[in-house]
Length: 386
Image (cartoon, rainbow, N blue to C red; front, side):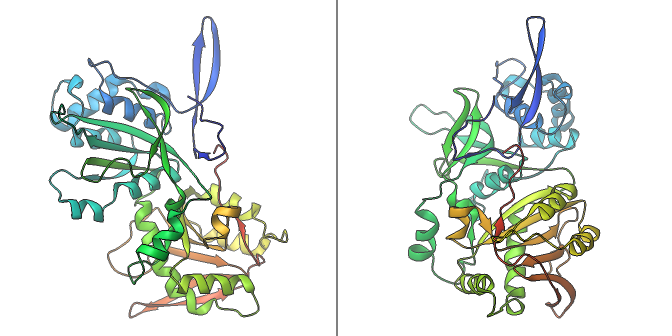
């Protein structure tokens, strides 16, 4: 199903599928929509097939192959009864698709809220890998029934109230370190095999107490969640802050001011090396400056095969212009340690500044500062299909 043409709808990636109409073959671009039949496939099967088709060729993703993979986890079972968490994990592993999942079964409501399913759904969507949400029915006729749906896009509302009000009215204090780009997302876009394709599901519609299982899919060679990447990047940003203040550059002054007020905006996107380098070279600031060729060549040698690009912006610039004031680039191909050792940090770029890690002593990092020909804000990363 092709994505909606609504200007607020963002679907980072979709695939091309060959279909036969009579004796003619056509190619259709979109996200595969599937329906369960209660025999050899249930809602979990069709959700998996929709998202797996973004990662592997259609010919590999058959319901028989899904059921064979599931049986390796728990032995033979009845596909009509759906898939367990262990079976879903085994299917993703068998198809070589990385993931980060959380099984909320048995968790208290406070525990569930500490691991908000919305953050993992959004992280999977924003990087184009997709996500799945399993939830429990409610109501007098519900008998412990469950359903699971795939998500692959989201809406982006520039005039949303939540992003400003959340910080300004409700969450003032040390725990508020930044504003996630998720704050401008009002709905997730996904399929529901019971109702149809390309539905907008309000981000907060499914209550935390109903959520049973969430899966954030990861793009190839990505070893950890976008939620973790964002948390690491905001820590790194505060470590860098003292070295990027420049009274001569108004955009750096704004960045330092908003970061100090804990109102800086972060957005994490996982990219292959070639995707990031293309974005680096295509970037233009407000006066059409592009990055120095020499710096691009240097950073090309530092970039890992997959990266988390964590874009840094401010509340007025991000929604209005879809632009940023810099980025922190992390190695996505190696799992971070539990220590604050900057093991995944590759470099950071801000107006007029490029920051490389010199070393870490007693948990405190020091940086090498180099030039950047980008002196103001640049466009956010947007996938070519989205």
